[in-house]
Image (tube, rainbow, N blue to C red; front, side, top):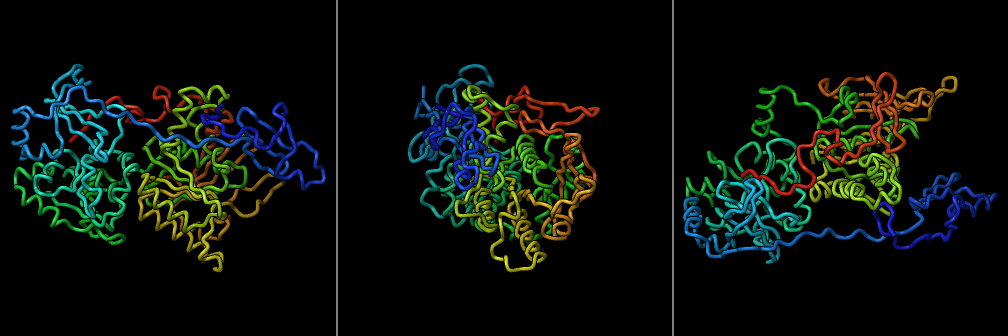
Length: 586
């Protein structure tokens, strides 16, 4: 039996009456005067019990651990180890000898290429992990490429770096062979190049991060173009600048062109002469050259948005900054933060890590996120369907939940966040709420000094790892005016005026119970081009899926569509979720 796509291990762990809709609470009933009062509301379809007295949400069952993802192993239809003379001569023209082709296990065969719609002769770049064929990249005479469908993505030639202290990373198989030709064997290539625009997807690095973790020096020698620059920045972010060295290809586009133009010894010198990555927190004009050129060419950069048009009109952000979200209890802060992280993910492919004591147990938080994607609250039978499972898998790949059974503290959360940047590539960290994830080193300080130290740690984390941090912080005790809650300001956040002074951004989530709307207000935005201070928008909360819905002429525009289905997705996604083949720029 399954619930929400998870297989049940132990059913009805509290031994409750499965026919009943109410029961006593295993948590609080025993200690109450009214021990027999049935305060626990039972939802057997979702496997949840909610106590109307103590507020606990109980998991009625335990679940099996998630199964590991399985990949398709390549099946070679025709694989000729003896390369045709024309292929050998073509590689010779690129400076690659027959001996290197043999060493790198390059073969030839016949393969259906979807770009041409037929089977053609291809070169086969074979990817091995621990000596086992794991993937294949096919290249035809017209420079069309594809990877083996369903096979695990990895780095080309990754076995060569398993026991080395150093490695070189390039952007193509022929570039990797060029270094092997020059006498440098510990070289790997990314499987599908980089893109000039948008976020760089390094999902495959997650499975093979351990290969790079013990390296003392990582040399980056990617293509000398905008896409390569984009990829280089993401590799530095993932590995950390302390072990990265940057190679200079001078006037050449890539390592192979450098080999052809300057020869083997010169290519080897590219690694020997590589310079350390710029020192963190110290910049020179040369380090900002590309950003400066972009500014002169196109003006100030647009900020990142969440895909809600009216909110995007008054607020956006850059990375390396943090956002404080405040509001009274039950105002919808955490739900709006979820809307933000889902939006960043759908708009830009950002991955998010949560350190949240407000959303516990964790599977309930997962359910909230999945429903935002799925578009509705499912019945049990819906969770068996492909559409629901695709949404669950999307959350599994893009959202991570930090959990310490012995309690949270800020330093541990930021350390785990750093690990998730490097291993999983997160771009967003949510701390919810601030007061329950304490900075234990500084608890003896005054509230002003404590808040200052706390926010400085968060700010440093954002800048160092090029991420956005969303910090949920409660205001002080609510004030009433004739029975109506007075809207809090940024100065009302618990922790003193440091929040206003130090935070780049502040957002208020304030519920209007009379009109059944939620006000989202910009309390502070750092730069005028990113938003409008004190501007606000009103939304309605969709109880069916937890989304915030735009209002038109005072009426909500409900959206209950499945966002993972590309035909229903309101976001502009530039990549397919399940590509049959990939066009690869090399």
